[in-house]
Image (tube, rainbow, N blue to C red; front, side):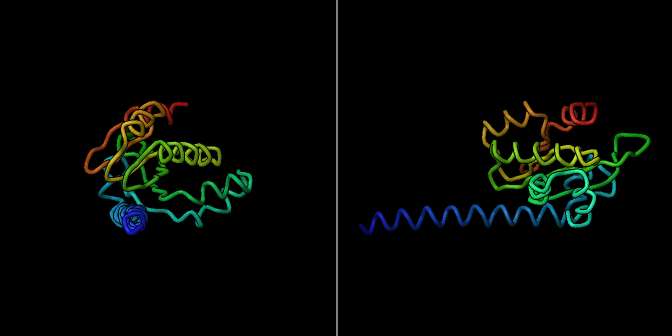
Length: 163
């Protein structure tokens, strides 16, 4: 019985540490948005979803609004790769280990932001990504920021901004 209790305790600890790692990463991306996302957008800044909530309320249902409000980070800036420096929003989901769920949430929330009139690209950011998460990110044109690696930007911009 001691071993069974120990196994349960270790499982709980692993879950708790995973959540803490995710929260720590979210704070890191939030505090250093320009450093992580400045490669694509100028003057990258984190925007509080409360700042755009009224506009979201006019364009989305109550359930859709609640979905968007659960977004980990909303980053705003001007496109670095365009001469007109058009405004761009990044819908960022953060996790220590990114998976298909994170990719799907980024897509769903970016889609709702676009529905509300924001030119948005979905992004997932974390320390690691599962093989299936990476495959889905490529399939759904989601940008991946993973432990110093960046991939999928050109494909995401082509897919999400030229729809």
